Structures are given as structure tokens and as C-alpha cells.
Image (cartoon, rainbow, N blue to C red; front, top):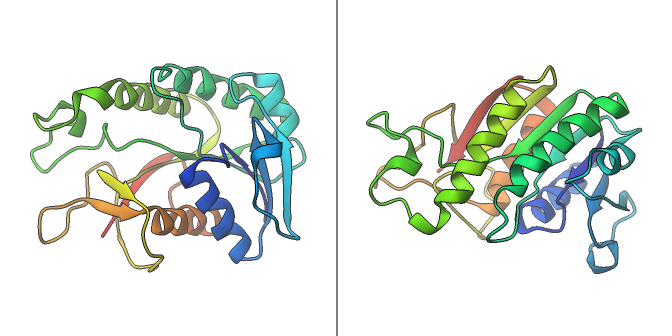
Amino acid sequence: MDVVVLGASGTIGKAIVQEALKRKHEVTAAVRNPETFTLEHERLHITTVDVLDAASVAAAVRGHEEVISAYGPAVGQEKDLITAAKAIVGGMQEAGLNRLLVVGGAGSLKTETGELLMDTEKFPAEIRPLAEAHAEAYEIYKNTELDYTYASPAAEVQSGRRTGQFRIGLDRLVFDENGESMISVQDFAVAMIDELEEGNFSRTRFTVAY
């Protein structure tokens, strides 16, 4: 496939780019500052994008088959997620693209009690604004006609090994036998490219954890 990755310079975005290249896809990394993007590969192309601007998004994605957004805002700029969601939708529509995969947040997933993760007592207050912005962005994607998939990671995401082994859920957190919900960045990227190739979660969300 010919996929463009928005926010490709972030930790998850870069892992997604690497996983897509590993599986022989043609990849365009769309980033704000191309000169700082250090990955090199014969099937990797680099372009400039401002994900907060629909016209810029349209220019970056035009001519590609699929779009993955791994955009994450800086601390204190969480509301940019909402602006970006609107710009991505508008830019894709302008460019005539329909298929979108989004790296979302875990805060709006339900726990075993049915409570949202971000509403639980132990959820860190400092990342509540980010969780709320992710949830609002998700509603924007849901209310478009795009063929979107919203992928929520486990409650904890950290750099680790690529195992290719994990469990999949829908709108509820996935926990292991120890009551933990976690996934490595590398395996989350595997799940994203699995969805790119298989399209099992059209116009809905899914989550992955060990």
C-alpha cells in the first residue's frame, strides 16, 4: 500500500513508519520539520505538513491510498488535537481520500466497572486534559463520512519488544492476568499496520494490550 503517516516524528509515529516499511509498504512521513527526520529507506519519502491546517494536510496526503495519524500535541497544547482532527478530516476530503487510521487515547475506554478510565480515581490529573481532547477528537472522526479506524492503546504504553502477540478489544480496556493494561510501542505499531492491511475495524475503534 501507499500510506502517508502524519506525526511520523513522534515515538509511536516513527514505530508505525518502521513497521510499515518492514512489511514492504510505500511510506511517506509527513512531519513539521523534515530536516530533523533521520530515518532513511528506499521506500520512505518525507514531506512537510502542518496538521493544524486543512490545506497543508490536503497537500501532504493527496495521491496516497491511506492515511495514518499519529499526531500528538505538546504539553499544554492539548486542544490542538481537536484542531488537528478537524484539519485532517477537511484535508482528506479536499484531497479525495477516505481511509484514515488514528492513534487515539486510552482515557475514553471503559474499565471493568463500566467507568471511563479518565474518570477513575487513579487516573493522573496532569494528563486529564489530553484524555479529554482525545475523546473530543474521536467524536469528530465518528461524525464524518470517512472510513476511519480509531486505535486506542492500552492504559500504559512504553518502548519494548516487538512480539506480534497481543489481545484485541473494542471499547473496554484489555487487562492481563495481573490486572495490568499495557502494550509496547512496537507492538502497538504492529496492530496499526495489521489494521491497515486487514481493515477489520472500519468506522469503529479497537484497543490492544497484552
